Amino acid sequence: MLDTIFEQFNTFIELNPHYGNLIGVVLFGLLLIGYIKNWDWVMEPVGGWMNIAYWENRLGNKTVRWFMGSLCFLGMLSSFSLFLFYEYSI
Image (cartoon, rainbow, N blue to C red; front, side):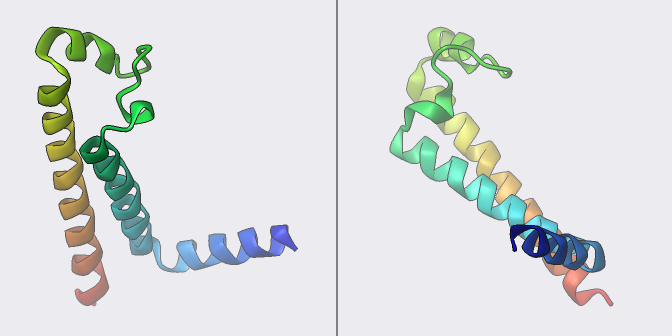
């Protein structure tokens, strides 16, 4: 049953790849909410692949959250703009 759901989803995305931009909007939105609410997992306090902990120690928590939140907002805006462009350009 789960395999058929994944197959249907994959088929839908193959036929309508611009809907992947909406997935990007949701993911950027989740990160943006995490930065606004100061969730720990968003900032990666132990230092992950982006090493945000270095920048947090150097510039401060609030500055890094503001900067990363701004990037997430721009990511949401560009993903949604791309979705609208490809949805209505045909």
